[in-house]
Length: 246
Image (cartoon, rainbow, N blue to C red; front, side, top):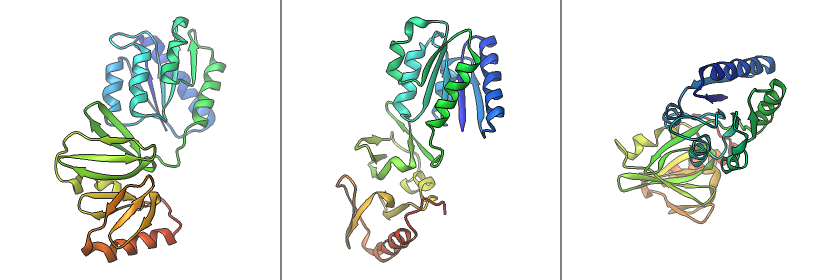
């Protein structure tokens, strides 16, 4: 589990960091804590890694806490956001980021620990694998389980999600196979065609030409690969559709 703390006041950043470490030790959690003194530094870090819990100040330079929370929420709907601030007047506005709680400074230790317990209870660490996708709107962090399939779309890659949404990357460097290689280390993903990858947990049917995915999308199966693809799919289903790494 990864926790990010962002506060532009050094003494407050140090205090929240210390209390968070105390909570982790008390509960015996496996967690990493990362501190950021400026919201820009946190947003830069979010481009390449995912945090499960964000502890955010509200009044900071350049980016207001509410806008920071919105930016995080755009790319990660599952993140748990907690505001810790001296400004009670933004409590209602903060709901735009769907926070777990809105805590006022000076920080009450019990209230803080209770809030962390609630945040931790909402985190699903059973599927920690995520796939970062750089789009024209910023970085989107997709959980493996949310991906139905993906396909090459010109120089970009388009992802269909379980929510029905699609996420399209910017132009990628290298080949499609190189780009999606991390997905194929997880056994639930299969490449039935040079331009497609499917999540076998999201397959509704298979024919001699294509997979039918949940949501109705049809993914072609390369004719020369059909026997191999069919065997891989049925072997996976006979194993119970487990999400195991290769």
